[in-house]
Image (tube, rainbow, N blue to C red; front, side):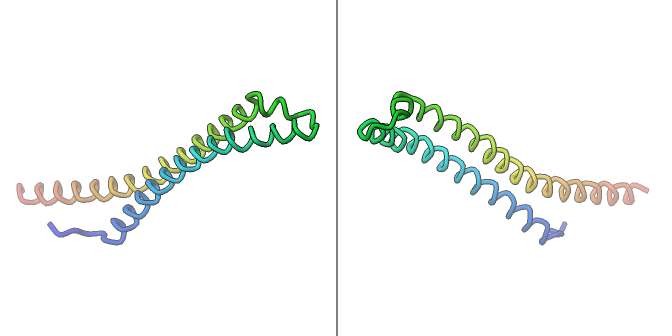
Length: 114
């Protein structure tokens, strides 16, 4: 049987590739958020302590890490959900194409039996 629906196959592949790209970017974003929270907020807390800012102890004492973890959790939920949704959309297009091919093959088989 010939391959039909080349445009739909292309669109499905594009969605799957976009899903993978979004997943990789989500992982990189989460890693950078964790690194920024550990190093950047800790440094900000030390500067606050050095210049007499009263909130520096909370940031240097672990509050910054907690903020970074919460931001990372939000990025994982949002980016991961978006990546899975895009990939599933591409797979859904391929599923519909396979459904049509199977239906066409079944109809041809039934016509040959009669």
